[in-house]
Length: 137
Image (tube, rainbow, N blue to C red; front, side):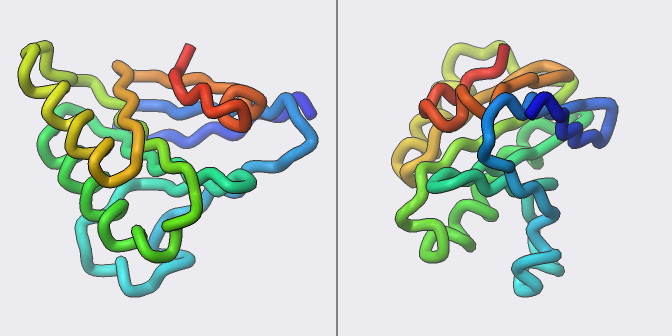
């Protein structure tokens, strides 16, 4: 307990503060699923009990990041059909348009996943993930 998992790319960070006995398992999607090697995919997947987190760490290309998250969720939907899914986009540029973000959130909801967006940094505790409170602090 008390360890931190820091996933970093493009000056964006996703930090899991491990405050439980259950260890998250972060990995690059292509490491476990070689079929994703030459496809658009998110940067990391984190498995933790019956939950799976899809993490995209982006600079400024929001649309591309959303496409990478969506494709990963679609490609692995059968594998993770019994898991609760949360998708995290952490980037330097998130559109403020009132129509863009809700549209993406609804698209992910239809795929059985929750979309969380955060500018530059997301910090979350394992206990929050386990309680299905997927929002960053």
